[in-house]
Length: 480
Image 1 (cartoon, rainbow, N blue to C red):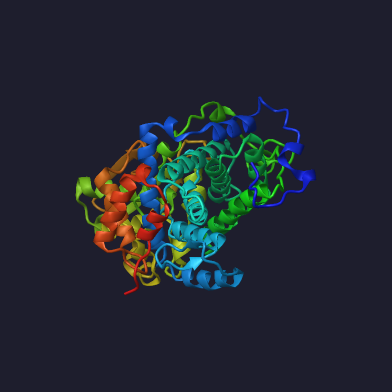
Image 2 (tube, rainbow, N blue to C red; image 1 turned 30 degrees about the vertical axis):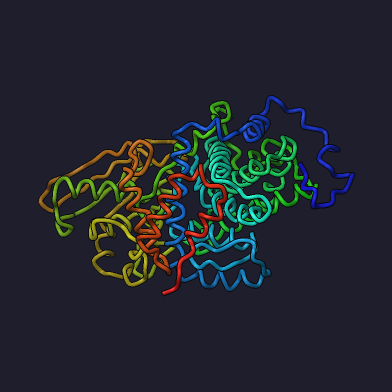
């Protein structure tokens, strides 16, 4: 389906390309899934999960506006061109679609507080929601995008992102959260446009050709890490625009000799594609109760549970050990220091667990430089170690075990088959709403309680909304 507003060279029309003779491949399975998706076929639980994680993502995006680098990113984005098609969440600035997606995506992920699909090791909603909503704002000027449209597009996008991520078995090398998120966002846009199989496949090929991001930024705790989310929102938007103009990406982008599963995640299995069912993946997302890397949450969850159950003081602690799978050690087993950058501290399990013990939780302010430098936190963090367990999976975040040795010789321990926020130990509805209110109130412009109530009510009935711009209206906050 080519947008009639855009001229198409007769030599490159979709109809002129011979379909891949690959009906038995996982690529074809994935594309058929996207094209066949309809809102009426979504399970009730998937619709409810979509609304839950839309609200959660809006909240962490508003909180992300507090990060100082956001101002620099706004100034940088202003050099990319001007427009009024979409808006930045929080400030309400009118900007081009690509700029809105970039900035909102960055705000979602810059404090590591956004939801995660754990088996896939993918933060799908960061790229997906920022991209879909920015595109929908612009499209709604001629044809409003409804709440049902947005829910379906999000579910389809998460299905694609998480299924590709779940198929991967190798150690993280490229930044899968952003890359799979971009592929998912492209599929979500294809769903909104009702593209046919060939156009959908070509669009995903164009997106694949633009993917970017490696784990080097994660290893170093670089501030560029969350920007990789923003970079990939633009890949999805560009891919759809290219497809609408008849410029086609490679069709064998997933399994080809230089496709995703050859170059990016080469150790993969096809089973997740056989198990694919509409809306299952969005119903399998994990909340992140703390604004830190998900791999730090087991340590924080474990020490808080033991402290709650046994009532010891932090000065009673001799040593803490967190036994965890290889991925946890890869991502967050790093030395704490009083001068580490906030982006590094969010990925430092000893610091996050020490903060949890000392304050009873982990909050956005705990990653300000003054909090990181506190002697008490650094001394306690030095007592916390991450150790290998017997798990050999390179993509597992659980189970974990936390042990605490007290100075009186007593040893405490807890096993965590699932970490707080995962489907096996989900946040209660009250905890989910408490997190949203806390996040939405912690941005550079705090969301008033009445506006938070209004947004919660609107998301609860999202399937009845006729124009998603009404959602964005509620995300615009006055300066104080």
